[in-house]
Amino acid sequence: MKYKQYTVIGIIFLLVSAFLLVVDIILNGGLLGWFFITLAFSILAFTVGYINPRLSDDERAKFIRSKSVNYSFFFIIGYLIIAFGLKTWLDQEINTQSLFMAFASLSIATLCVSLIVTERRN
Image (cartoon, rainbow, N blue to C red; front, side):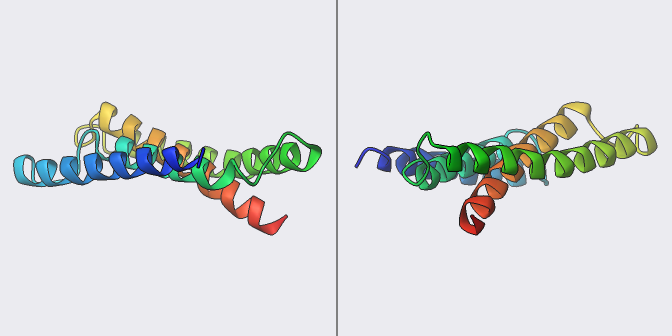
């Protein structure tokens, strides 16, 4: 019962991100702004609700956490290279704030997915 609150928070963030998606499409004609961040927070809430009961504070949990951070580090470096390349080559078309929001949400989602995959494999 203790970890179901994370599922409720994830559903709330998912509803907020769906609302922001509709507003972004209606007003701007594309995906801009806070949609990606709220979607990443909903993924984070669902991940914490799924992972927390399965991982305690033992050596296995520390190993899984460190391994998932190491896996996601290489993906985040790849995201940085792509983001810097996009900003360099398409300087006029890309807003830096939108690029940073997309990078932050991709980093959060990658860390969550790698944590789930690493926990399932070990």
